[in-house]
Image (cartoon, rainbow, N blue to C red; front, side, top):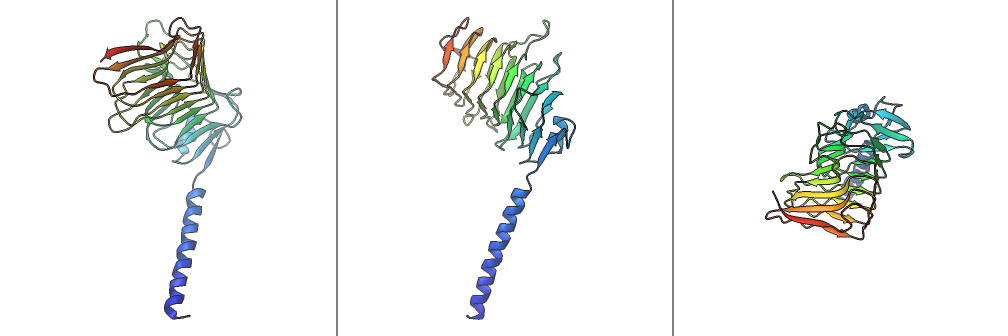
Length: 270
């Protein structure tokens, strides 16, 4: 074998080994932060996390409101919502969970009971310029708690975007119950054509209005395979003047609500 061929073989092997080490380092870089074993609160776990990390929460009730701080992380309960609760404390403390400015970085909130949130726009979860997966949660007893503080825009979960950053969260297999805000899931003023929120396989019961799209200017939200029963309202959407939005609704069970056993649409929102 010539010296040139030997050198070429060596360089190839070096590239392969170097690439393998880089991949190993990449995957090894993701950490799991355990609450309360490593950090005493969920927010402290989020503060310590970096993009790609998991914050794993043990059973218990955590009296706090949490903010993802723009990080692409997963906040998970270890044993599910029946035994793991985040309690927002009510009394105008704000939404229980805030996920904003994450862009398209993967992030998730899974396996909690969220209760006693009381925010101006959203009481349980506020999502802005982000595309998290919100899955397998019980969202219970959030919303309007003060009679002098009622807002027409208040919702249990609010989703908004901007012209520079789309919001395409997936809201999946959650149970919404006993909500006291005007709306359950509210998509408020979507303007980005790339925003495509999905609301699917959820149950909405014993609340106010389940799902609303207000002032839609753009985007393509999809509402599929949900059960909406025993609420004040079902599904409502209102397109803005000149809207290019393309909402899709199919295969939802909508029954036994005070109004909204069919989708209500009104044009001309501004």
